[in-house]
Image (cartoon, rainbow, N blue to C red):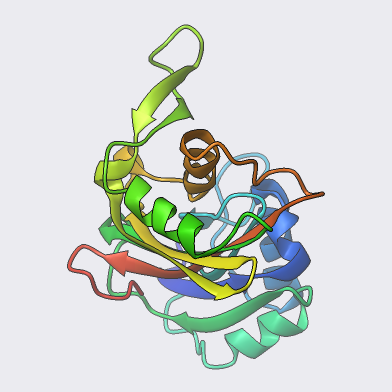
Length: 230
């Protein structure tokens, strides 16, 4: 008899040193945690079956995230009330499950994502914040990887896909940029593009760790109607 499965969604955070973990290593980490937690999930079919995991909108290496999502299939009717605690016991400190639930929406419903970029640099003052705010009110081209050109790169205008962007000074030499950008496959905006554009258009170098440092955190993911995605 073929077992019946149902989808559950695992929402988790990836912060601190975990922001440097690759997606492949994250996949292995979650598979190990599920196994050690005694959570039986559906496996792929074939000669080498493996747990079937589906991540959505995985954050880039170097980006912290308060809202990552993973779908797995478990035995139909499973009691999932203790899954969060069982998983967290088996995860490293900088990866934490925040919720486990039966989803009502598909990953295809994800539309936008919100990020907080904190930039610490002697270049950051009130004037620079105003220049950053002004910059993204006009077309902004950054180099983006593509299969459409021989070089593998193209200049891409990201401005139409930035829903909002506000830069403000939080402390002397420290600016916080809050932005909501497209997270759809065809128009996905990597928050690193924001840093690249500032460096390019405002003739500053925010990538030199001896003079500047920045941190990117994904703080929210939104659905098609602007609702918090679950």
